[in-house]
Image (cartoon, rainbow, N blue to C red; front, side):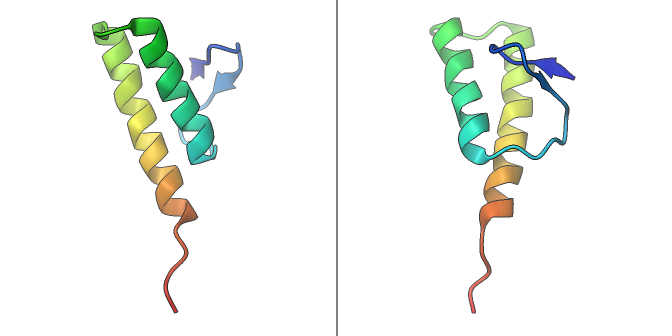
Length: 63
């Protein structure tokens, strides 16, 4: 479980939109500046995995 910058609790595996996850990635980098702490790097990796899953879920198979 993670607490977002807005104070919302994010459960791993929760189904959020790619745009929502992307906004959290951007916020993480905005707060961190040019480099991430080890804890921020871990959170970034988790967000990337969640973002990729959200993008994949949005893909519509070709006919």
